Image (cartoon, rainbow over all chains, first blue to last red; front, side, top):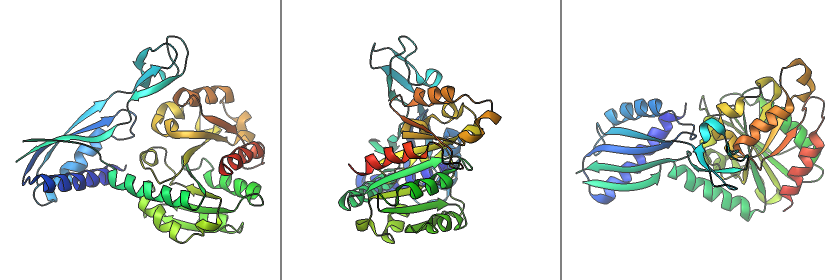
Length: 114
Length: 215
């Protein structure tokens, strides 16, 4: 349960960026979370909502949207792309070794503000 | 207006981790992050590792726990410099904690730094501490399906230790099955079945680690 400290880091990064951009009010924030990032989207949302209600401007009351990126494997032998969350990193088509091409992300994509 | 950021949420932690790694590189030591469930036997594995390697390498250790200094006392009793971090309930170590703890260790006189993370297979997998690689300590009593439940931790592991093989017969776990499940998430992983209790399998693991530290 490290989502509260993640939400705090998120607010810190946003505050710095908003200051650099001269933004005085942030309305919406879009974050991308990978399926294998060990982050619970619901817990991150709740933590963010709680913290954002109590921070000063420009982040007061900012809303968070989370996009979950699926864990996708790509076989290094036959090139097959598939759902790694179901199959892990051995290719379901040929049994070869796959690498993860998506699923461990944890980043701020963008935000809207004025 | 919309501002495109595309920045890692943990960038503050990651930049401290990079500084830690540069410091470890400068001191010429190998830093290893041990993660695993509570009760997997991380500290017992470290005790065996220290006993096997302390005549061959100069060791140092950082112990992470929510509370108590018990683990540091166990490692300290073997004569190795050790610092205990208490996270006061926190579920993982962060790079800044490790950087502070490292201030109290003789890094320049060490070849290998063993970092025992807080017992937890989820949160520690998200935080770079500045280690050179991660080892997951799993035990046969946890069942064969842990990697399926915690892919983030296993995906990160360069080596996986399967501890408590001395009680394998008392479980329904098949070692080949555990190994196959582990490899599903990291096909090139090195797997070391061992018993920290009896010492079985410890030498193979310790020699492997020694080889990595000597590079």
